[in-house]
Image (cartoon, rainbow, N blue to C red; front, top):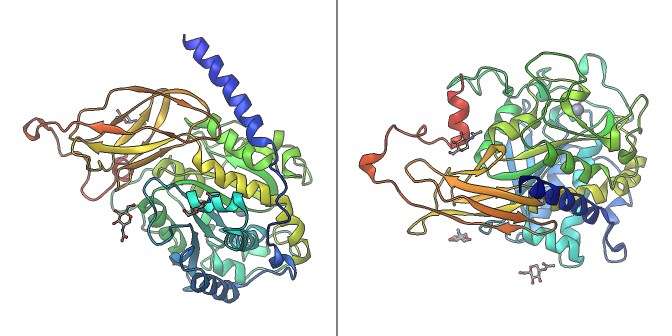
Length: 442
Ligand SMILES: *[C@@H]1O[C@H](CO)[C@@H](O)[C@H](O)[C@H]1NC(C)=O
Ligand SMILES: *[C@@H]1O[C@H](CO)[C@@H](O)[C@H](O)[C@H]1NC(C)=O
Ligand SMILES: *[C@@H]1O[C@H](CO)[C@@H](O)[C@H](O)[C@H]1NC(C)=O
Ligand SMILES: [Zn+2]
C-alpha cells in the first residue's frame, strides 16, 4: 500500500512536471511590451515616480506599499498587484519577488519593473496575465537595498572594492544579516543589532501570510534552494535538505527550465549546475540568509534565483534578459497555486488563528492566517493531513489528493476543549505560532 502510493505519487509528479513545462501558446500578439523600447535602469527617484504614477492610474489593480526604510531613508517599495487590491479576497494566496538585496546585482531589479508593467498593462487583454492577477496577490519589490544600488555602477560585472554597492550604506551584507537557524535566538533580541533593511524585512515577512517568494540575485545563473547551511560549518559540497526538499527542487526547476541559459547550468565560467539548480549549502554555505529565514520563521517558501554572470550588465542587454526570464518569472508565480488550501474554523464557523496544518511525513507545519486561511504547497500525490490548535481537539486525519495544475480545497473544523480542561498558557500573547516557536527556541 505504502509502496503503491509512493509509486503513484512518483508517476504523478513526473507527469505533473512534464505538463507544467510545455510552453503555452504564443501570446506575443496580444501583449504590450513597449517598455522595452528604451532600455535603461531606473534609479530610486525614477522608480518611485513610476510606481506612484501606476498606483494613481490603476487604483483598482495596483497598491504601492513599503516594507520600511533603508539607512538613507529610502523606501523599500513593494508594488502590490491584484484584481482585488483594496481587500484581498479570502484564500487568495500572496506571492512576492524581492530583488537587489545585494545593491550591485541589478538585473533582477529592472526585470521587476518590467514584470510589474507587463502584468498591469496586459491585465484584461492577455488571458494568462488576467487569470494570474485575478487569483494571486502579487508583491513586487525591485530593491531591498536602494542605497547600495545608488552606490553601484552600470557595466561593472564584479563588486567594487570593499563591496561598496553590494552591501548597505553601513557596509553590511544584508544576506548575512537574518536570524540563522543554528543561531541561538532569545526573546527581545531578534531584531537588535540588525540593519534597518533587515528589521523591515523580518517584520514584513512574519506579519503577512506570504506563500511563495523569489529572491533575485546576480553573479551566477542558477536557481538555489534551501537550506543554505548546515550545523557543521563546512564550506560546501554537501546538501543540507529541508523537509520540503523535493518540492523546493521542483520549484527551482520551474524557474530554470524555461530559461534558455539557466537550464543548461553552464552559463558562466566554471559553472556546472545539473539542470540549472542547486541546493544552497551544496554550492556554498552561508549564515544568516533571507531564503532560509522565510522557510523557517514564516509560512513562506523562498527560492533564490541568480540571473546573470555579470552583476550589473549594460542596459542594452535588458530586452534580451527580459525575454530569457519572462516565462520563468510567470511560471514561478503560477506555482503559488500548487497543493492544498482551505479554512480552519471552529464549530460556529469562526476562524481559528495560528492553527497548525500538518502533513504526515513532512516535518514542517503551516499555520493559519488571522482569517483562518492556510495554503500548503505540495507536489502531486496523496497526502494525509490534519489541523490542530491550542485549546481545540485535533481534527480527524484526512487523505487529500493533489493533482497538477489545480488547487485542492480542504477545510478543517475544530472542536473547542472545555475551558477547565485546558492546561498551560499556550502560546505567547500576540505572537503567531511560528514566532513563538522562534522566540522560545533555546
Ligand atoms: C474584505 O473582504 C472580506 C471578505 O472577503 C469582507 O468580509 C470584509 O468586510 C472586507 N473588508 C473591507 C474593508 O471591505
Ligand atoms: C478575471 O476576473 C474578472 C472579474 O471577476 C472576470 O470578469 C474575468 O473573466 C476573469 N478572467 C480570467 C481570465 O480569469
Ligand atoms: C506540527 O504540529 C503538530 C500539531 O500541533 C505538532 O505536534 C508538531 O510538533 C508540529 N511540528 C513541527 C515541526 O513544528
Ligand atoms: Zn547576491
